[in-house]
Length: 113
Image 1 (cartoon, rainbow, N blue to C red):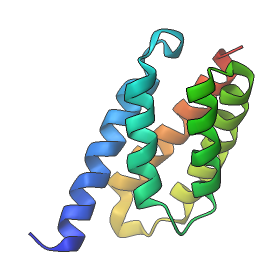
Image 2: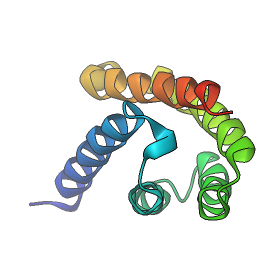
Image 3: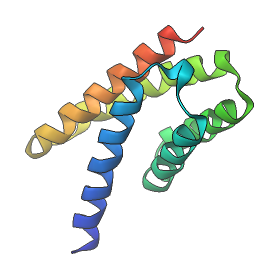
Image 4: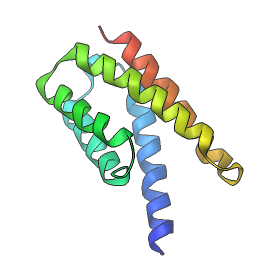
């Protein structure tokens, strides 16, 4: 399997895992699972603007700061949706998944108080 193919598979798996987590009640979600997913996204998005917010989100999850988690999820939702809009047409399925994740991030941020 080529590096690109393996990367695409990892990203698709991480997308599915993240969407699944966001569809759950985040208040009862396992913080360890959230940290693992955040760290996986950090590895994939090191060269992006989202990377800094992921580090902040990880710290907020570790500290249990619900207010910061909420704020960061909303910001990541907006950034993720914007990134989905920039994906080329040949990746329509991936763009749709990323858009779904962006909406779920924003919704999760709005439901956490």
